[in-house]
Length: 297
Image 1 (tube, helix red, strand yellow):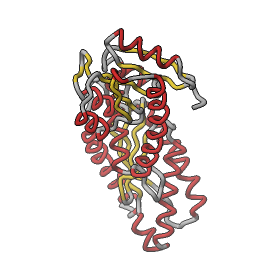
Image 2 (cartoon, rainbow, N blue to C red; image 1 turned 180 degrees about the vertical axis):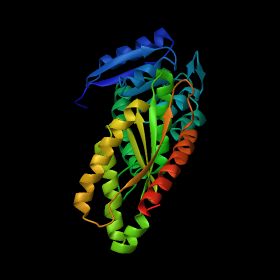
Image 3 (cartoon, rainbow, N blue to C red; image 1 turned 180 degrees about the horizontal axis):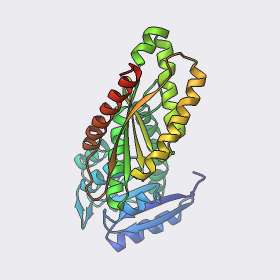
């Protein structure tokens, strides 16, 4: 571990927190230790990207047993968690590991090397698990998130947006005339067109935005901390990138998208499902307009 690892200890017992602090002082790796007494105190630190690993007690003022683990895993599945507890219970330990904990350490048996090794190997195991999970969340054709991956990350992002009072915008896009492209040029060219649309989204949106392919010719994106007035500039960037892709594809049937929009306001805080339904209605109207123009109606 060459980087400084930022460890968050969630422990309300000052004596136990002091013991962990003393043990970590002997560690061979660089680290920063922050201590909080409640699970709810973790959330802002996590949202501000100040946490690399969590050491979690199971008896806290605002959570008991595995409740804290479940809350933290739901909020930040990308952060490895080690359980520190005074209870030596095989069943609880097994449930904790099945629920995503990287290790389960009993305070009464805690000593320096055990804790140091647990931290180092938890990070390695979590990185490996994350890599495997990432593969299961990606669409193999475009490299975008698949339906499962998009929903997982978008749900998490909307929770953060609601808590921080931030707007967001959901885009739902349907590629126009994919069937005609497949029939005219073959499915290989259709796949190239889908990849082109994916590249257009990636270049037009920011790294913090979440982009997915829901399947077939349907794409979705959550523009994080965007607001409705900013949508016109986002559309302009996306259309510009679509034209770039059209010059590469060189098809008489140009690549184009019908895009529906649904804004997220933290005051109303619609669910992801509500946003998708609203954007789908808007996309359907845009699709009808496109077909009228295409068919000269």
